[in-house]
Structure formats: structure tokens, C-alpha cells
Image 1: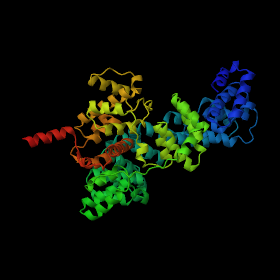
Image 2 (image 1 turned 90 degrees about the vertical axis):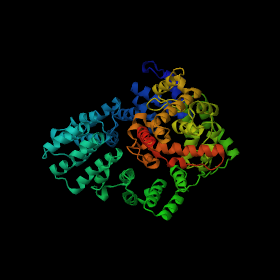
Image 3 (image 1 turned 45 degrees about the vertical axis):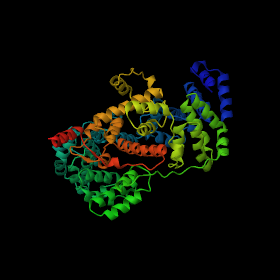
Image 4 (image 1 turned 30 degrees about the vertical axis):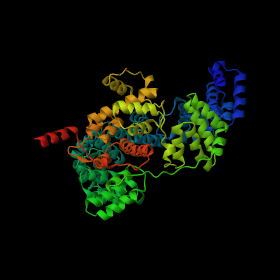
Length: 593
């Protein structure tokens, strides 16, 4: 396939033999992943050569990217096959994403033939504004008559310059503004300048003569932003929100604000207003138990904690600690069918996937795996978890297990590769190996070659700059970016970085983990002015990703400890309080006097 694709570029050198080879190969390989890759290359070549009839014949929607989809429409226009083309052009047009230049001739034809109307231009501009792409939204709005463009330009102004635009609306109460645009700009103001939103809330309600529903919606934006910032005024603004405007996501932040402010009555109110499905989640059952305990109803609290123990997660470990018990994960072994595993391994897509993976062609390996996996029966798909684990393709094993809702075979899904590297890193950093493994599993799913969207590398997902700082502090050789793909280097520097965070945050593991994920400066901003229970602090981490990250790693550490020691784990140390190290130091000095 690679050889054939090479013969298809550049377009002016393509021979008839190359086209014939592509056609033959695709006929033989049907819908296999390698066929999809070659088909995209051939279609691109046919479009460049304007071989439109052949292009339409060979086009397959499942193999097409955005450019090819538009070229498929262009092919119909070029061949004057446009009878049923309008709905397809409209479907392509109505997207919030900017599309490749190959789409513009199709859209130009649509404008000339009244397929893309002013109504559709406005509709797409609104889709784009909802996505926050202000530059493209303004380009679209400029194509409309002024009366239709002005509300869209104001919407863009509210998103781009929320404070100035809100002040303009306050100064000109008669200036028309759509409520959706006002809410979008107001929400942006609350997120970027919450004090500015608080100061302008009553002014906006009065100047614009907002009804109760509109005022409630603006209050909710302010309340949520105040909750993210752990501000006590959040509860006052949540009180101004109509019950109908409080969905599950809003009620979560209402409950968190109440937790932070030690208002257990409102914690119970917020949780009781959640949907049954949300309320029955382990986390909110745990907090209902905590609220009952705080109100003195220890019998109800104990009963609720017991119900949380059936789950396997951070909250079940916390519930066990509250009950002064140790926690044992609920191991559920996935039976191994050796004959079926061997049968799967011999299937061509899986054989190709394994070879591609061995040779570092990960994207191609993943495509082949998925192709073979889709053809398996439900029971065979479960055995495919064993296949991936047997090949030490651990991230694939875990992903496949998740797809099959297999979560509790810890012996299968919590393997211990890189054991020598982890032990050495734990020793030099004075960390528990279970914590190092927990961070490793969460960060990379055991992939030594993992690279994140922001450039973090390797098993413990280190940014190159962070790795260099850790190396300098610990008097180690400065690592190159390539060095971070070597497990020994990556795990050692990652463990030392975590040790530095623990030292900075007075050995408070939850804070150090938050700093590992979101950065130490963010974790420092989140520290309380007075000590607070660790569970309440973790629940109020404002970044959803970081909050989940801390909870998952703490639970991973329970699982790894249980696997290593083969006995129930004690999470009672999680009941400690979180405090700013500077506050702790002042308190200690005061106690010393």
C-alpha cells in the first residue's frame, strides 16, 4: 500500500499502471484499515487530477476526511450531477468548525444557486459563536445585511470583551441584545472577573428590567464562578437561582460551595434536589452520609457509609475510613479461555496489530485492532482483554476492559511492568512504590512512548521543562526530550518531581497530586486560609480533570497496595486536614510559644 501510494504523488507523474495497482489492491483488501489509508491517498490523487468520475466511483464515506467529503460534492458539480446535491451541501455547511479550502468552491456554487441563503449564513454564525470562534463568526456576520449582522457582532463583542460590552449595555439600556448573547457574555465575565460580575449583577437586573427567569440565569453564572473560587458569596447567589435552572451540574457546585463553607443543611438540600441517578452515585451518597453525621444522625450516616462500601473508588475508601475499617477491593476475575485467546491471536487483523505495535506503528496497530475487534462476538471481545494483556499492550487491555464494563479484575488490569525502574525511583525519592505506580498508570496507562497534546512525555508524562528542573535540583544529567521516553529516566525524574511537590506542600499528598496534574501554582492558589478536611478540599478542586485525577490516583494506590500486600488497606490517613504550609507553620510556632 505504501509503495502504491508513493506512485500517486505528485499528480502530474501518476501512470495508468499506478491507478490500476491501486484499484486492484483496494478490490482485494475491501474495508480493511490498510485499504482505507490507501483509498484516501488515491482519492486525493484523483481529485488533484480532476478525475471526477473515477473519484465518485471509488469514494467511500467511511474513509473520507473533511477535504474528501467536499471534493465528493465538487465532483458532482463538475459532472453536472446536482439534482439531489442541495441537502448534502447544507449538511456540510452547518457546522461550527472551519472547513478546508476544498469546500469553498462547493459553497460558492451553493450561494450562486440559492442553496446557501442568508438564513443559513446566520444559522452557521450562531453555531460558530456557540463554539467561541469569534474571528470566523465575524467573517460570517459580515456577509449579512447590517440589521442581521449587528446582533451577531454584539454577541462576539460580549465574548471577546465581556466587561466593556456589559458596561455598554448598562450605559445604553435600550440597546437591543439577545438574551442568549447576554448570558454568554455574562458567563465569560463571571469566569474571568467574578468580582466584576458580582458588582454589576444588581445593576444589570435593574437597568435591563430582567424578569425572574433571566435574573436567575445570570445569578447562576455568578454562583458557579464564585463556587469555583471557593468564595462564601456563592451560597448567596445560589439562593437567587430558581430551582428550575439548577441542573445536576449546577447542583454539584451548589453542594461543593456548601461543603467548603461548612453549611451541611445546604449540602443536604443540594443533594436532595439532584436527579435520582445523580443522587445515587457513590460520591453523593458519601456526602449525604457526611451531612447526616454532622447533624448528629450517626445511625443514618453509618447506614449510608455501608452502602458506599459496595463501590470501588475513592469514596468507598473514605467511607471505610469513616467507619474505622480497612478497605478491600472487590476482585472479580475475568475467566480465561485459553483456546479462544489463541484463536483471536491467529486472526489476521490481530496478527497485523501485534506486529505493527512491536514496530512502533501505534496508530496503524490501533486501527487493525479495532477492525478485528468489531468482528468478534460479545464473549470473544471480553477474551480480547486477555489477548492485549498477554501481549503487554496494557493501555489496549484497559481500554478494551472498559468497553466491556470489566472494571474489577485488578490482577489483570493493574499489572506491574517496569518494576525495577519503579523500585529504584521510589527509593531515591523516598516515595511509596504504590504511589509511583498509581501516577504511572493514571498518566500514561503504561505507555513509555506516550505524548500528550501539550507535549508531556513518557510514563509519568513529564513536560521537558519540568524534567530539566527536577534534574538540576537533584544534580542529575539534563535530559533531552528523547530521554523522557526511556522508562528509567522518566520514572526517576517523575518521582523526584512528585517528591519536590510533597516537600513544597508539607507532605500533603492530595495537594501534591493536584500540583502534578494542574501545576504547583494552581495547587497553591487552591489552598485554604484555614484548615479543612481533605475530602472537602478534594471535592472543591475547581478543575474537573484535576479533581478526578486526585481521586483516581488515591484509589489506584489502594489497589496496588492490596495487590502487593494481599491484605485490606488502611485509608484513615486520608481523613487528615489540608492546610496552607505557611498557616501550619504559624500555628506550630504559636503552639511552641
